[in-house]
Length: 177
Image (cartoon, rainbow, N blue to C red):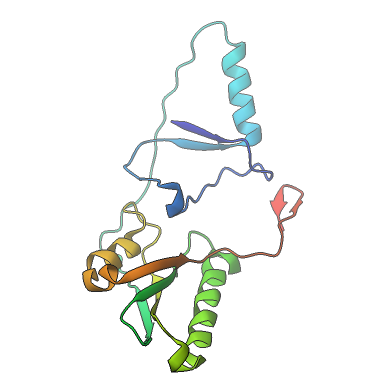
């Protein structure tokens, strides 16, 4: 497939989908084009009097011995009902947003909840920093926690996923600021 990110104001060719989009990575070969490259390709295809063929070679590395782990903290409530607050602690690129912002929110909530008087903490809260988020088995850290915590999951009332905070987004010279 060829995915053209025509709606991104920066013209980026990078896409990091979130679990809420129900994306499944199954090794489909493809390429992602930014807005201007995508427009150029569409223009070339439309202008051609004959069908256009192409060969696409997708390269990558699989690191089977790479290791990651989930980090889990628990603040006990008065009942066994569970709320999960989570984010991932790995990143696809270097930056404070990916995903230090999510971690800072989860840790701030954990600190706040731990200092909240016990008699007002009705539910038990699990604070989960998931590892191995950027894996073909996306989101591997989440699946690992779910599959290895059936008792916790059976008592879970709500899950709050946090990541990527910003006050606002501006585009300057084709880059997010």
